[in-house]
Image (tube, rainbow, N blue to C red; front, side, top):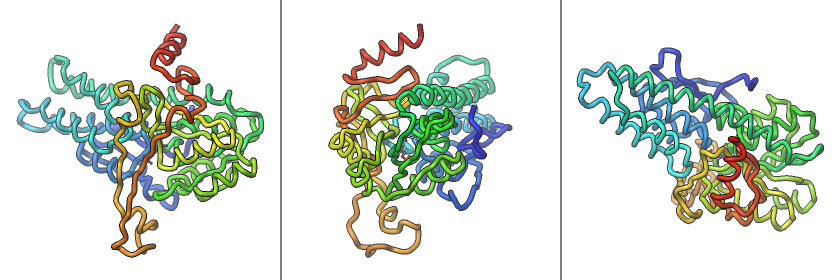
Length: 356
Ligand code: MRU
């Protein structure tokens, strides 16, 4: 389905490591690295070797699979399941905001309470489940891309934040997947790419992906978004999600809320493109979402080296914000486009219609 010249994450053929494209080194270097244990994978997620809600979930699943394989070599089989549960805890806690991590870990954990004939059989089941989660991700994103394409006019200037493409998923991506499908289907699309301070996922990753797909785009500083809207140069805003609460409040990359407010002010459609795995039905509203706070150096040293303000400067660096449901025109999911009012009942109805 996809035709990228890269992959974001995969399980090595011998099942002994997780292979990830180190997104911190893009676009200058395309470097794949192997991670051999759950703790190495958790560290890679924390340090953002891979980032983006769906792909960190998939990486965590592979991390558990690799750990299951690794622990087979340990002599003490008594603690096999106990150690795997600890590995699940570690991966689940590697980043706090995207719910995909706990969604995947929950699926993997279920297998730990099933009776298997041997530890080898359990390890095989975990490998199979992690691989299934990865292939489902591709199919889900492809479906989202097809559905979301309905929202794109024949000619459109689309505003996008962060990176939601094949790098942030296993393939296709969410918001960028919709954009890619629109382009592939012959629409005249141009993307305004917000650079996405402070880690510059837009500048470093989204431009890289769009260039490979020959999709016309222009890089802007985040604060140019309002001006472009005022100049009537934005037809549609498409972004992803890290966690959506039951009432539709959405956590996504810092700056999403600002973009949503501006879109509302200028009467521009603002859509969240998200798989159901990013919807957290256990929480009622955005108030319950933990917002990750990252280190000050991300702001003080944007290129990783020279300081742009004195080292003693007080810094606040929330990685995400919450956009209230009332600012969102709709959610593009794999079961359909969810329009307001956002309730779990409406979502269930969409799911049932999709399944029948
Ligand atoms: O901090 P990041 O780069 O992991 O944040 C990623 C985002 O906020 C994305 O918009 C979100 O995960 C959706 S990706 C399909």
